[in-house]
Length: 172
Image (cartoon, rainbow, N blue to C red; front, side, top):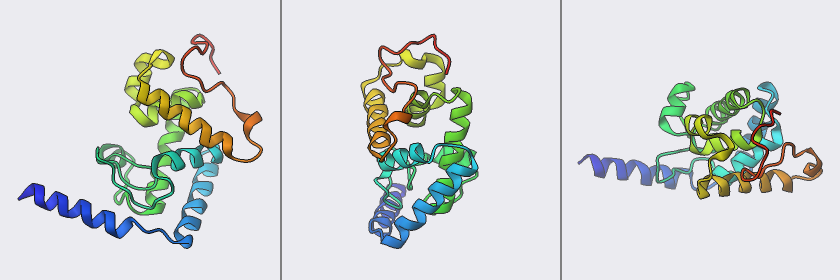
């Protein structure tokens, strides 16, 4: 009974959230820019994370249970007081607040911020740049590519994004 209810909810959320209008994309872009500026997170970085996480789809639900534009897990959403992960405003607000918190925790190192966003801050806190899970390395590289594709930003990419081979002793 529980499985059928869960399956029904997932299917309903998929069909209700699968389509995205131009207006929804504009709304998402607006909230990304507004919250990024408010929380002092590079707008380009937030855009790169959104592109990687959801491809700007309003409310995809992952197989692991992450949902919304910034793919917030239920526990993370609860910690950030996000009640409706499919609401663009709430999802972006929570996601950007989490990125800002991670930026503070990892002293602005966007490589570690991206890795922690993907796999969790505790793992990256313990292992730092020595963490070499191929999925995490691929995720960070993909976020970096999305970031770099934004016009006029290539020269802004500091520190280097390559998790492997980076100077582990350097503090940004």
